[in-house]
Image (cartoon, rainbow, N blue to C red; front, side, top):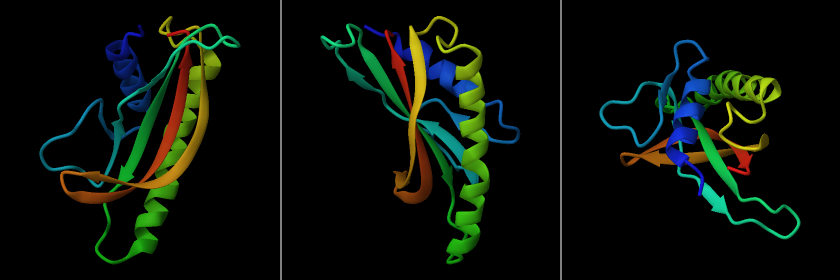
Length: 135
């Protein structure tokens, strides 16, 4: 079984490379900043005949608070932020796809727009999916 605690901590540390960005390795509490990253729960997949190793998918949620009714400003904020997180993750994978030995290989799967509900409030978010194989 993968060490999801170590994987979560490593993903949070990679996202902290983006300056002035609050990163929550798990469910946040208290007042949330206008921009933040939340590491979601992992999706585990057992080994397959073709792959012969298990994999873990992580959702790295880049979230922004809605600025009243001005969705244009909210969208611009998110559009400016999520590529920075994506770049930090991509650079780490390019440098070491094992992410310090946490897996045999990792890669960025996709990034999709969504709305994340936290503490009863909806946050526009770009969810970056990172896959770790042979965890």
